[in-house]
Amino acid sequence: MNLNPTPLVSVCCITYNQESFIRKAIESFLMQKTNFDIEVIIHDDASTDNTSKIIREYEEKYPHIIKPIYQTENQWSKGIRPSPTFVWPKAKGKYIALCEGDDYWTDPLKLQKQVDFLESNTDYVICLHNSYLRFEGTNKPDKIAINHFKEELILKDFIDVDYFREKKGLVSRGHTSSILFKNNLIKKFPDWYYHKAVAGDIYLLILLAQYGKGRFINEFMSVYRINQGGITRAHSTQKGHLLHRNRMSMLGIINEHFDYKYDKLIREQTAKFHLAEAQLYIQEHKYLKAISHFWHAVIHSQDKPSMLKSIILLFGKSSKVMRIFLGGFRKVKSLLKGRKKKAEKKKNRIQVSQILASQHPPENYDDHAVFQQLQSKYSPRTGYKYDYYHSWERGIKRASAILEIPTLQQKGLKFLEVACGDAMTSYVLSTYGHEGHCHDIEDWRLPEAKGLEFYQADLNNSLPIEDSQFDLIFSFNAFEHLPDPAFALQEISRVAKPGAIVYIEFGPLYNSPWGLHAYRTLYMPYPQFLFSESFYMDKLQELGMYDLGKKQVGLQPMNKWDTKAFESIWELHDLRVEDIKYGSDTSHLDIILKYPLAFRGRKLDLKEVTTSWMRAILSKKQK
Image (cartoon, rainbow, N blue to C red):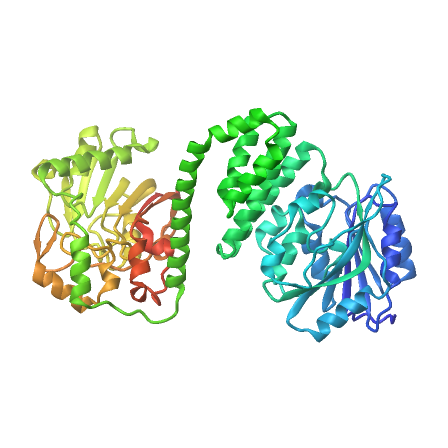
C-alpha cells in the first residue's frame, strides 16, 4: 500500500466509546491489500473512554492514512448526523467504504474486489457483500447475515427491506460494514436525512440507488457486532415502538420524496410495521391498540386476504383479541372505502402535477361539441349575488371578519376601503363607530354608504390623499383585476399610518377554476385554458356576458398574476406580513386529467390551479 495522499477509496468510520472494539476495526482497514491508495477518516464523537487515545496511536503510526476527526462535544446527542455532516464531505476518494467502530473487516481483498467490480461496471454505484453477525456478550453462535439475496439490486429492492428478518438479527440487503459506494453522487442530502432517519444506512442506499444499480457479492468479508445499545437492535417493547414509528414515518417521507412512484411497495412495508406494532402491544396486554394496528396493517396491505390470514395464524390463539379484531370488520370496511377514495385523490394529484410539469406547448380544445358537452355538464354559479339583501349580508360578514383583529375593535379608528363597490362593508364598520372613507374608479355605493367621504380615482395612479392618514385600509376582490398590484400596494402603504392594518382579500385568481370571471355565462371550470381567447370571446358574445349584477359588454380585466407574484409584494413598501391565508378548490382536477393538452407547458403547478382566493393581513412598520 502506497502512502500517496490522493486515495481512490475513503474508508469512513464513526465511533463513540468503543475502546474494546476500535483497534480491531482499524487493523482490519490497514490489512487491506490493494493496487490503489486509501485514506481512513475516523470520527470520534467525544468518547469518554480510551477510544480517542487508541485512534491517536494509529494516527502517529500512519499519518498519511489515518485522518481522525475529534469532537469535543457529542454531536449525535445534538441531533447532528456525523457522517454526512463531518465525515463524507472530507472524503477525497472516488469511492467511500463504511464501517462503524465496533465492526471489522475479515477479508484483506475486500476493497480490491468491490472496487474492481465498480470500475468495470459503470452502471453500478453501490457494492455490498455478506457478513457474519456476532452477538456480543452472549453464547449465541455467529449467524450468516444474508441467506436470501439478489446479486443485482435496483432502487425498489432497497426500499423492500424485510423487517422480520432484521428483528431476528438478520440483514436484508447488506450491513453497513459491507457498503462501498461512488462518492459525490448526492450533492445535497435532503433535510429529513439529517434529522429523521434513525437507520441512516438504509436511506443512504435508497438515495444512492437513484443514480445506478447495486451489486451484492455473496462472500463473507466483515463481522457485524450486535450490541445491546443500538437502536436497531432494541429488544424492549419501548425501543421497539420507537423503531417501528420511525420506520413508518420514514416510509411516508420516502414515498413523498419519490412522488409516490413506489406507493404500493411502501404501503406493504408500512403494513408489516403495523403488524409488528400489534405484536408488541399484545405482549403488553394493550389489546385495543393492538387491534388498531392490526387493521392498519390490513388497510395498507396490497394483499388483504393474505394479511388477514397472517393475523389469524399469528394471533388466533388469543380469543379476546380475535373477538375485538373481527368485531371491527364493518368499521374497517368503511375505513378501506375512505382510504381508497383518498388514494384515488392522491393519484389524481400526482397525475395532474405531471401534466402541469410538461414542457410541451399547450393546445386548446376549440371545438363546439366539446364546448357544448362541458356547458351542459355544469350549472351556472349563482353564489355571489348583487341584490340588496346579499349586499347587506356580505357587508356584515366582511366587517365582522375585519373586526376579529383585536387592534381594530377599539372605536374611532379612521379607515379607507379601496375599490369599495357597494361600500356596504364600510357602512357596517362606520355604524360600529369607525370613521369611514371609500375609494373606487366610479361611485357604485348603495344609498346607506353615500354619507361616507368618497375618493374617485384610478388606483393605477396616485390616490388624491395625503400620506399617513388611515389606521385601517382594506380591499375585497380588487387585486386580481388591477394592472399593477405592486403600485397599488405602494399607494396603500403611503396613505397608511405607521402601525396601520392592511387587509386585502381577493379572488378568484386567474389560474383557478373560475379565474376568467365568466362563470355566469361559461359554466365549465378553466375556460381560460381549455379554449383560445378568440373562441371563448365569441361564445360570450353569443350567449351574453353577465357580471356585477347586470349584462356587460366584456369581461373584467384580469392581471393574470399567480400566487408567487402576489407573495413577492406583501412585504414591500414598509409592510410586514401578519397572516396569509389561501382558499383551495381541488374539485375540478378531473378537467385537467380529461383535457391535459390545454394545461401543459404553462409553467403552472398544483397550487396555482387550485388556489382560488388569497387573504393577506399586513401591518405598516413603525418608523
